[in-house]
Length: 114
Image (cartoon, rainbow, N blue to C red; front, side, top):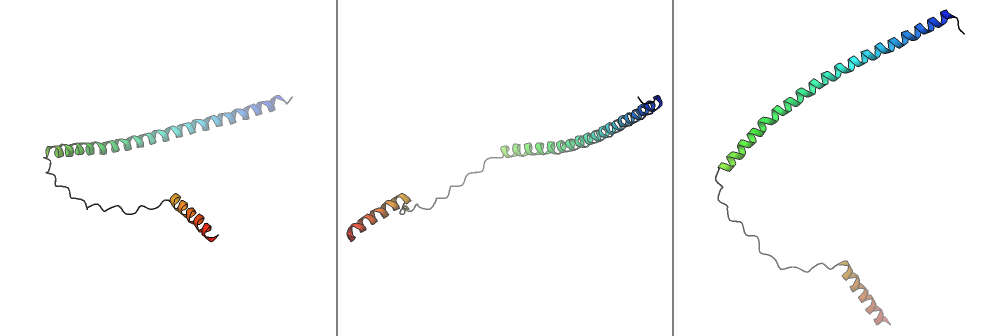
Protein backbone atom coordinates (compact mmCIF):
# COMPACT_ATOMS: atom_id res chain seq x y z
CA UNK A 1 0.00 0.00 0.00
CA UNK A 2 1.35 3.43 -0.86
CA UNK A 3 2.03 5.82 1.96
CA UNK A 4 -0.85 8.21 2.87
CA UNK A 5 0.90 11.32 1.54
CA UNK A 6 1.28 9.85 -1.96
CA UNK A 7 -2.35 8.76 -2.07
CA UNK A 8 -3.43 12.28 -1.07
CA UNK A 9 -1.37 13.84 -3.84
CA UNK A 10 -2.79 11.36 -6.41
CA UNK A 11 -6.35 12.11 -5.26
CA UNK A 12 -5.65 15.84 -5.44
CA UNK A 13 -4.24 15.55 -8.98
CA UNK A 14 -7.22 13.44 -10.05
CA UNK A 15 -9.59 16.04 -8.63
CA UNK A 16 -7.79 18.84 -10.43
CA UNK A 17 -7.94 16.95 -13.74
CA UNK A 18 -11.65 16.19 -13.34
CA UNK A 19 -12.45 19.78 -12.40
CA UNK A 20 -10.51 21.11 -15.40
CA UNK A 21 -12.44 18.71 -17.67
CA UNK A 22 -15.69 19.93 -16.13
CA UNK A 23 -14.76 23.57 -16.63
CA UNK A 24 -13.80 22.87 -20.28
CA UNK A 25 -17.17 21.17 -20.80
CA UNK A 26 -18.98 24.15 -19.29
CA UNK A 27 -17.05 26.57 -21.51
CA UNK A 28 -17.78 24.49 -24.61
CA UNK A 29 -21.48 24.30 -23.73
CA UNK A 30 -21.59 28.08 -23.32
CA UNK A 31 -19.85 28.65 -26.68
CA UNK A 32 -22.18 26.25 -28.53
CA UNK A 33 -25.24 27.84 -26.97
CA UNK A 34 -24.12 31.31 -28.06
CA UNK A 35 -23.45 30.14 -31.63
CA UNK A 36 -26.83 28.43 -31.88
CA UNK A 37 -28.64 31.53 -30.59
CA UNK A 38 -26.81 33.74 -33.13
CA UNK A 39 -27.58 31.40 -36.03
CA UNK A 40 -31.22 31.17 -34.96
CA UNK A 41 -31.52 34.97 -35.10
CA UNK A 42 -29.90 35.10 -38.54
CA UNK A 43 -32.20 32.41 -39.94
CA UNK A 44 -35.26 34.07 -38.41
CA UNK A 45 -34.39 37.39 -40.08
CA UNK A 46 -33.81 35.69 -43.43
CA UNK A 47 -37.18 33.94 -43.26
CA UNK A 48 -38.93 37.20 -42.39
CA UNK A 49 -37.29 38.91 -45.39
CA UNK A 50 -38.36 36.14 -47.77
CA UNK A 51 -41.91 36.18 -46.47
CA UNK A 52 -42.03 39.96 -46.75
CA UNK A 53 -40.91 39.75 -50.41
CA UNK A 54 -43.47 37.07 -51.27
CA UNK A 55 -46.54 38.80 -49.83
CA UNK A 56 -46.50 41.87 -52.15
CA UNK A 57 -45.88 39.63 -55.15
CA UNK A 58 -49.02 37.68 -54.34
CA UNK A 59 -51.08 40.85 -54.02
CA UNK A 60 -49.85 42.17 -57.39
CA UNK A 61 -50.62 38.88 -59.03
CA UNK A 62 -54.16 38.89 -57.66
CA UNK A 63 -54.75 42.42 -59.02
CA UNK A 64 -53.54 41.37 -62.47
CA UNK A 65 -55.94 38.43 -62.50
CA UNK A 66 -58.85 40.71 -61.56
CA UNK A 67 -57.93 43.15 -64.34
CA UNK A 68 -57.77 40.34 -66.90
CA UNK A 69 -61.19 39.08 -65.90
CA UNK A 70 -62.66 42.58 -66.07
CA UNK A 71 -61.58 43.06 -69.72
CA UNK A 72 -63.91 41.78 -72.43
CA UNK A 73 -62.70 38.80 -74.41
CA UNK A 74 -61.27 39.77 -77.79
CA UNK A 75 -63.09 38.32 -80.82
CA UNK A 76 -61.43 35.15 -82.01
CA UNK A 77 -59.80 35.07 -85.41
CA UNK A 78 -60.77 32.35 -87.87
CA UNK A 79 -58.42 29.42 -87.75
CA UNK A 80 -56.08 29.01 -90.71
CA UNK A 81 -56.85 26.05 -92.92
CA UNK A 82 -54.21 23.39 -92.93
CA UNK A 83 -52.58 22.20 -96.13
CA UNK A 84 -54.53 19.53 -98.05
CA UNK A 85 -53.66 16.01 -97.02
CA UNK A 86 -51.51 14.04 -99.43
CA UNK A 87 -52.38 10.56 -100.53
CA UNK A 88 -50.58 8.05 -98.33
CA UNK A 89 -47.36 6.88 -99.87
CA UNK A 90 -46.16 3.30 -99.87
CA UNK A 91 -45.85 1.98 -96.37
CA UNK A 92 -42.37 0.83 -95.42
CA UNK A 93 -42.04 -2.92 -95.54
CA UNK A 94 -41.52 -4.46 -92.13
CA UNK A 95 -38.52 -6.66 -91.37
CA UNK A 96 -40.64 -9.78 -91.07
CA UNK A 97 -42.16 -9.26 -94.52
CA UNK A 98 -38.70 -8.69 -96.00
CA UNK A 99 -37.40 -11.91 -94.47
CA UNK A 100 -40.36 -13.89 -95.79
CA UNK A 101 -39.87 -12.47 -99.29
CA UNK A 102 -36.15 -13.23 -99.15
CA UNK A 103 -36.77 -16.77 -98.03
CA UNK A 104 -39.32 -17.27 -100.81
CA UNK A 105 -36.86 -15.93 -103.39
CA UNK A 106 -34.12 -18.27 -102.18
CA UNK A 107 -36.36 -21.30 -102.27
CA UNK A 108 -37.54 -20.53 -105.84
CA UNK A 109 -34.01 -19.82 -107.11
CA UNK A 110 -32.71 -23.12 -105.66
CA UNK A 111 -35.47 -25.01 -107.46
CA UNK A 112 -34.54 -23.45 -110.83
CA UNK A 113 -30.85 -24.35 -110.54
CA UNK A 114 -31.50 -28.06 -110.16
